[in-house]
Each structure stands twice: as C-alpha cells, then as structure tokens.
Length: 153
Image (spheres, rainbow, N blue to C red):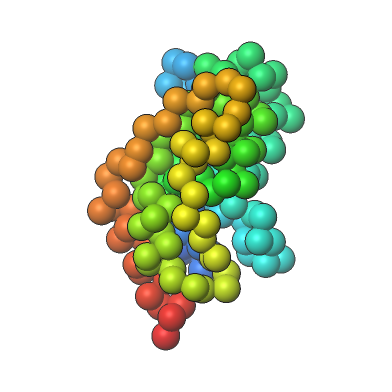
C-alpha cells in the first residue's frame, strides 16, 4: 500500500495530482507502476488507475489479471473501477476513500469527485472483484491535503 503512496508522492513532487497505482502479480511482484497522468495535457481521464489498467490489458491476458491486485493510493472512481472490471483485475486495494477525497477536494474543477464507492460499481458486474480498503487512510489523506489545500489558495 505504501508503495502506491510513494508513486503518488512522485506525482505530487512534479506538481501533479497525488495519485499512484501499482499492478502486483499473485506472487507479490510489482509488474507496473503509474503516476497520475493529468499533466501535461490536462487529461481528465489520466487517472493513475485507468492508465495502468489500459497498459495492463494490453500486456496481460484477463486470466492472468484475474490473479493480480491493483494497489492504489485512492479508491478507484467509477471510471477506474470500470477499467479494473473490464481489464479483469481480481482484487483492488486502496488507501483514501472517495468520500474522504470529496471532502478534501470540494468542488475543485480538476477533481469533480464522484461519491460512488467502487464496491457499488463492481457489484453491478457479472464477476466478482475483491475490494480491500480504505487502508492507511490518514497517510493517504496527508498527501492530498498537501496538494488540494495549496490549490484552493
């Protein structure tokens, strides 16, 4: 979990939204890392989770991804949960909840957070995705407070 925070920290250091994601195989080997990709083109769909899942689905077959875990610094939004579902990820582990993220960001135009738990998105699907989180939410919150409080000024 903390490795995803380190990836988010790298994004923060570059002036980007502090989100990070890791794809980990069944043996615990990190296969991919992804920082938020909002910058430099202001891509509103450049969420770390969505980008890593696009990369993963181009690289690995669904039966392999079903045994993988997506670790992410914040709960996948509806778009990212959909990407995890369609890629075939078997498990998602996250730090900061969407509800807490919305409380931090407010109505910031760069992060119009959907207060829609990823569990709700996955429950609408035809296959199971295990969800664990929020975990270490205070640590995840600290990353976002550093970024979003500065953005509100």
